Image (cartoon, rainbow, N blue to C red; front, side, top):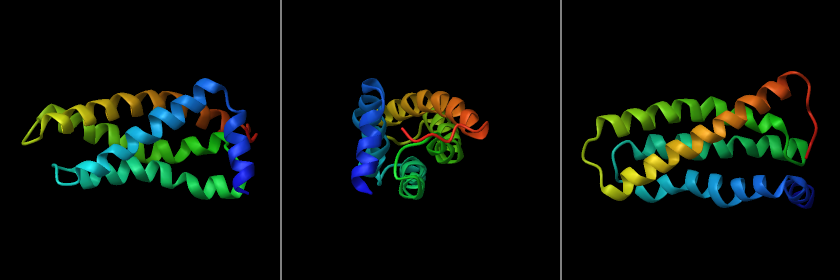
Length: 130
């Protein structure tokens, strides 16, 4: 099963592997390092939750599919709203945390653009496993 998932990941285009493995996942884990900051618990829960909810899909499909966009839409749309408001309203936040939130906002907004397309393709019947 794990080998099937790994092989599926490796069948993705190299730029997608880099995006997911070196940018998307690490950036969404970053809020865990700032749990003492304002709203960090909510932000970390939404960021990490969007990834964790993909585990049942990965296990069921034994690979990556466009269905994995759905948890991102469910949790990262609210996350982007929370991030935007947090950055707009400011408050007592350290400069590193502000940078992390800004990077997370940009990365997840880009991801959501891909996720909208993938979710629509999945909804229309593209159930292929990479």
